[in-house]
Image (cartoon, rainbow, N blue to C red; front, side, top):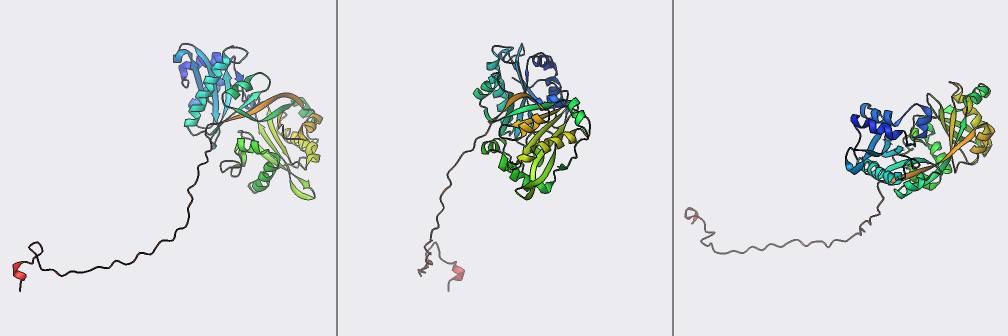
Length: 348
């Protein structure tokens, strides 16, 4: 199993036709394929493309059995599984192939310093169980909703948008909102409250995409506060949206969704996909009221390549040192011997 080079791309192209696309965001926002991702990782200098691993029969370049692709996240010790082939429905031995592919990808990224590997799997097709056996665990689930471009165009310029761009000075209040909404196990899985997480890099919130965050400011319990956050990632084909709403601000859910649609429609009417996690209450009803249609459910999984180890610290206790007595030197006068006798010229 080795990373592909140019002469192996034909094998990748054959396997890609029967694979599972796990990077739903990029697939919906732009025209991408496993083949273009493999090429981009070889010729680009930025965070483009994906590392690709191909499994061959008996380790020889005879027949390709499977392929897996993963993309490292920018400025974070993390990676995402973006594509795997063949699908479980296409090949009866695909599960065994997946185990070997995921093990190779995990070892390779772990050796390069990656601490967490993520996967976003569609629910209900058996893929989740295979990933569980490979060491991945589910930390949250989410539903995907869709609004067509025709519906967006019909709503254009009907809402006054009060959403504003997120600024650096919002950092503390944004972290408080994140902590209030997000369960502890999700915070641990995403490592957002560590030194490598959202504390210094607000742009890394929720997804590893180049989106823009907007703030919804409304009074909560009589105090002006950040009631919600809207993160929009625009692509050539569609827009991908993540929403966060304060637990005590459910009355603003319809308003936040309406302003989000108005903000997206200001540039060009593209379809909108909204991902809602299972612990984000109040948003689903607002999306359905605005005309969004449920598309699918998927699971967020993570595998840690490193483990925390608790090592006992040595107990340090103060010790009173006994003062040392000064040494007493004694001088003995002895007659010179042959060894220490003075030269004859010095004798009196």
